[in-house]
Length: 216
View 1: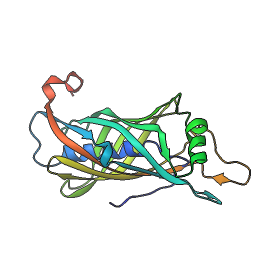
View 2 (view 1 turned 45 degrees about the vertical axis):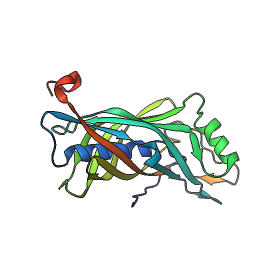
View 3 (view 1 turned 45 degrees about the horizontal axis):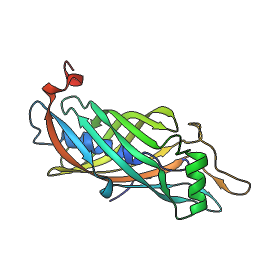
View 4 (view 1 turned 30 degrees about the vertical axis):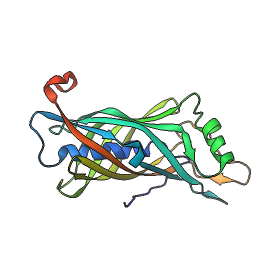
């Protein structure tokens, strides 16, 4: 899959989350939508890849994080969404044990804040929803105890009862209150770049049984 990378500060954390949201929105907006139904997207951690990269000198660290879980509902009529995507904050793996330990213990403080989450609220598709199409998802990202409004642009494709998602975004982790890991001559960007590819299983539930969507 293609990724659309942007600059983002130090480690990756929910990029995967946002990407997942994008797909759910697109799938819900696709053809053959059962009337009076909400789309339910359940993400598969085993087929989800979350990659991060940080510009730096003399090295530019890169690695992966693991998706813990993801379950999202989308109202195809309005684009309204709810649910949550959860990334394991302690799962960062760059292949360098010392760097990973510092990221886990000092920057992310994973013992205090074990999860990085994204809660989607609204999805918008742009243009035709046939084939692969662009989607924008707005929601709230929770990182290191802080909650931040966040918007992600991605691309979605529906294949039968599966939704394929890909997206990229940048997280200003230092501006969000996390420690700047730069030390002496080793310098890294204050943003971390995240690239996510994900697969979600698509099912449908009756909107009449969900009070949160009544009257909208």
